[in-house]
Each structure stands twice: as structure tokens, then as C-alpha cells.
Image (tube, rainbow, N blue to C red):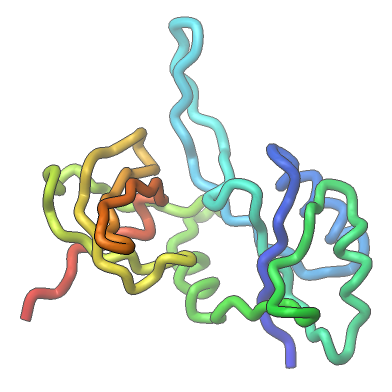
Length: 169
């Protein structure tokens, strides 16, 4: 059964790893978004990975040799549970793909209507389904949240795409 797995890459090597994995015949998904970068009085929009240092590979570990992924240029490792690659729910990958525009960039959500202290729910990623408090925007595509873990508040940075207002019913 084919499913998506998360591949951990070296810093700033997501595209390089994706290229080499495709060369080996793997189906690769590297979600990107448009990031606004300011440098030396210039403002430019550049493509950036939605999940820095991670990309997704579709594979069937029972049918295909997946261990060559571990020695691919740009790859640090594969997210695994024990010896078997961990499955990323296909709904998450489908939700990310549904937000892609014509050029393949993921449209990020606006968090302009959130204020410090507003309750939010994390809807994607490893912290999915956790409630948090909105603290601030870091840039157009990342936000800082306060999570209550072990009786204290911990700051985490997540993509704005992964945050939603909770349904208050």
C-alpha cells in the first residue's frame, strides 16, 4: 500500500534532495509558498519550503526498496517509527495540494484578524489538533503561538497555514 512519508533534509537542501529523489524514481512532493524577503533596501518574493527541512515521498515500503532514500544527496533521514517509515495521513497532503495555485505555490491564510491572546487550533503538522493562544505574526507566513505543555506556556512557531480559529459551538 502506497502512502506518503516525511523525509528530513539538510538545511536549505530541500530542492536538491527532491531533485535527487526524483532521479531515483520516487514520487516527491515539496510544498512551497511565496515568502517576502527584505534585504539591503530591497523587497523580493522568493519561493520557500512550507516545512523547512522536510518534504514528502510516496512509497510502498513492502514493495519498493526505500533504504536508498537514506543515502540520497541532501537527505538527513526518514521520519520512522522503529524501522518502518511513518505514514503521513493522505488527507494532510491532499489539503496542502488543494491550496496550491496555478504555479504550484501553497496559498497561505491571512492571520490579520487574530489578536494576541485569541484562542486558535493547530490544524496541520506534528502539533495538529492542539489548542493554543495566538501571540504574534513573525512574517507573512509564520506565527508564534503559546502552547500549554506540562503546566507552563511554551512558544512555538508554525506556518500560518496550520492555524485556524476554533469552532465555538
